[in-house]
Structures are given as structure tokens and as C-alpha cells.
Length: 367
Image (cartoon, rainbow, N blue to C red; front, side):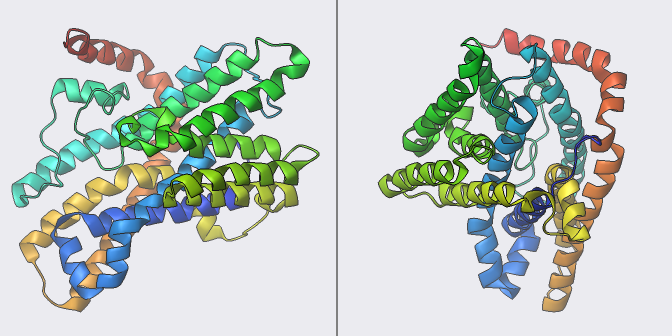
């Protein structure tokens, strides 16, 4: 996170809760530790395994909301050079992301010496690493080197798509740009909600997720207009129609999140509630926790497989300890890597570009 950006407590709270649910989802999904904990608390861990992943919709909506705020707070694109914004976004995402991927490669190598489990990624190839470094791993069909990393690539695509729509709107007359931007984003969101999001074949592309992301952007703009409540109600009715045609709980969560942000912005609660330091801290480190928790889960499972305790109390203590270790690792990762993104970019930009060019050479020749 950039230090110059003011913290928004409600958004921090949403990010904190969503990141913890995703961490617990993966803790309930992978390895012998998850199997042991399922036997101790089957109902709760069963819910975490099957439903907690839906929390990613919260990040999608918040991503669109914050992107609209930074790129076009009045619906008019501020950046004179859109490509510079894409480059900035790329490095902001990739420096912590690829650092976490490399850590996961090491953790996976250690875990493979102690445990045989499908959750452990195979030893990566150079082209697989290059695909991750360029955020093309999903599009090119490479296996992910860590859990949840598809989201980073999708976030980058969504940001670029929103930026492109705002750039198209800027070609119209100045007094119409905000209206055209809202219309374009709304149409793409509708196309996603009513068609693309209903077809899983599109799930490696931004358009599949643009319904939720677009809701976030539209919420930001609509909640600033004179008829803000009418606009939010209209948006909610369109989404309700999409749900009536094809109910998807993930879209319902996206709608609830968007309306919560809209009402929070209208009432002023967005910037002052809830005033809990723990939630603020967890929200601040949420991206780092998202990136780094899976390799910690792999290592914990590898060691657990050698110890193999049977006592329910010890199993629960091991699970809680793994969760706490992942959160602590996220805090350290935030301090060392994510919060120092500008420093690492200035230090690594040239070598990273050279490395990316070399690694991507096989991709260019790939049939």
C-alpha cells in the first residue's frame, strides 16, 4: 500500500475479513492437517472448504471502487499517459507477487521432501516462471505455483480494462466524459453479469469478473451524484435481475459489498467506521497475507505429516499456530517487501526487465 493513501476503515475491515476467510479456506482445503482438523470440527471446516473462497468477491468490488477513485474520481480519466498507469500497476502487483512465488517455490521443494500431496506444486520450469512474472500464467494454461495467484493476474487485467474504457470515454466532449465512462463501465458490467460470468470458460479473462469489479467502480461514482440513492437502487435492481435469471452466490456477495461501500460513502462511515485497530492492521497487510500464506500452510502440513498427532487438542493447536504463523509472515512480508515497493522497483526494475525478456523468449516461440 502507498503511504500517501489515506486509510478507509470500512474498506480495511472488509479486506481484513476477506483475507482471513481465504487463508482459512486454504487451511481447510489442503494437506493432512486439514483432514485432521475436519475430524475435530467438521461443520466449521466443511463450510470453510466449500464456501469461504467466495470472499474473493469482496476484493474484486473493492478493487474496482479504489481504481475508480484513483484513476477517475469524477468519472474523467486523470492520467495523461494511460500506459504509465499500467506500468505502475504492474510493478505494484508483481514485485510482492513474484517474491511470494519464489518463496513458495522454495517452500514446495522443502515440502516435497517430507510429504506427497497433490497440493504441492511441481518443480517449476523457466517458462512457467516467466508466465507468472508476466501475469500470463492463467491465459497460457500454466499450473499455478501458489494458491490463489490467478487473482493477481485477473486484478491486473481488470485494472487495464477499466483504464481502457476510461480512455475511450475521454475521446468524447469534456462535459460528457463522466456520463460516457459510467455508461461504458455499466455496459461491460452488464455483459459480464448476464453472459460471461455464467460461462466458466472465460474465467482466465477479466470480462468474467468485471461484473463485480464494475460494481465497485459504479458504486464509487454513483454514490457521489445528487441522486445517489436512486442510482444505487437502479444498480441493485439490474444485479437482482441477473440473479433471478441465474443465481450465483458470488454475485450476491459482490452486490452486498458494493451497496455497503456505497452507503458507507454516502453516510461518511467509510472513512471513520469501524474504529478497530486490529481490523485496520489486518486490512493493511491483507495483500501480503494473501500472497504468503500458502507456502506457510505447505510447510506446516509437511512437518505435521511427520509428527502426525492424534489428540484433538494438539490438532487444533497446530491449526491455530499455522494460521497465526501465516498472519505473522504476512506482516513481515508487508514490512520488508510490499510497503517498500518503490524502493524495490527502483532497485530491481532494470534487472527484472532483462530477466523477463530472457525468460519470455521461449514463450514467444511457443506454438
